[in-house]
Length: 409
Image (cartoon, rainbow, N blue to C red):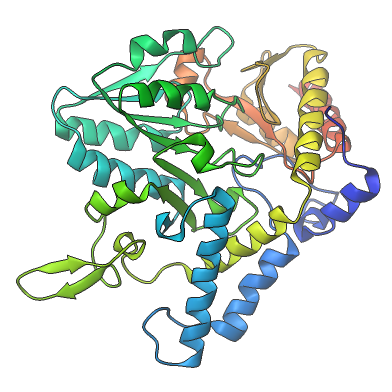
């Protein structure tokens, strides 16, 4: 059963996020752009500050106390990510975010594995970051990029999986939750079909890990990527999970310091996992911040947070369906708390600007999903995306602001 968090619990939760009390707007902030980036709790901000005040050093090679502290902090954060995903530490690679993780897999795994005549399958719901890398790799290999189409309600048309996952499919790369629409894809079913033909599977989990638990062993995926800043952590840090046997066989994506074992002017050999894919100094403070974000999230009652978010999803959908001239884009039953919509006779950017003037922060545009918007026949949408610190009051303020915007426009 979906249930909003008790008021006192929600107030205590919100109090942990200092920006939510910001007076930048001259009024209380209604932050509904969580699919782009989530806000950060005090504990994450303090962990990053503490690192720079008390621990700052480079890692792994320093023969001094601060170097030991920094190394322990970095590797401790890696252990937290491994536990969060139910993986081994050797399978956790630090990246700059989801985009770099997908590029790493596409160019290192795909670039060495794909050949002419092979096929890579993505879906119609993909972010540009899970389209363009595969386009480039397929073009070089002579492989074909195929796209699983949409059903009428803007969910994936799984009735056509057998048509699109065939003996020629080598890689399936799909988003877990659509960033543009909030649609939750049937990942389990897609992975089972891919396994039946021996295809490798990459999951873009950027939009799912903050909403519900993700277990790579249970999913049986080969690769999974996410970004720290969408998970209450800092920007510039992300994670690639890769099945160890595949990572061992893959060539490095970037070369330089740390990822090497030996170097001569004639040849080089590579370091062991996970360092083989971590050339140069990592974003140590970012990893520390992400570790703190996981500490914060895993100490919450995640079932209660999910029930609260689902209550917000149901309430905002109910309000949207009753709002004159509002058209929900992607009105499907399996969604996270995201509302993507249009107002008749208005442009999304104009609506977004008027909402912003009333202290309501949403995102407008194509959301880095131009092919999806073209399929839907719209230039873009207005997107309100929710996190556990949002409330029904935020939704009421959204619609009050929409009423004013609609009258003005």
